[in-house]
Length: 194
Image (cartoon, rainbow, N blue to C red):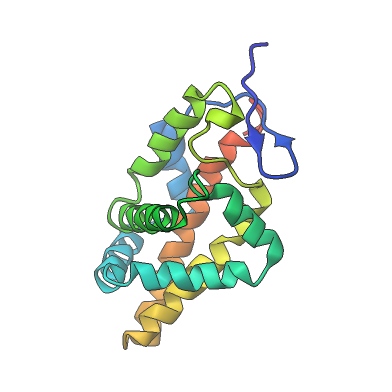
């Protein structure tokens, strides 16, 4: 079999062949189509300066939203770091990974180091059991964007930021997350359809 299948989520949905990370040209085109501007990059850097010491609070708020919906809580459980008996270590790892993702998203949105690492790891894993982090069902990647963005806005306003700059940062974060989800979608879509 020339295609590498990857188990996705609890329902056993399968992806087609794991393609390579989209090329720099493909990524740049998506950033342009997504109307991601220099102003958006600046807004994200400002947002990082405000939220960098609150990433644990930010993640806890997002996890609170996720926990309110059993389907999303199940997704979170499927994405948790292995070794369920080491819950404290798992939670620390999740907080560390979230902080790293947020920092890279805000400070270097075009670099996407976490995504490049993920593609390498997922492509090198011959089986779902060896996958470093299982991929959730695709539909949840999209809807999880909403609590991530709404929660960030709540934190920005709680820090005394005026509504207009908070909205600009929220919009920039939404663009960045949706573009990341678009790039991740290549792991779910059969070869040639992406």
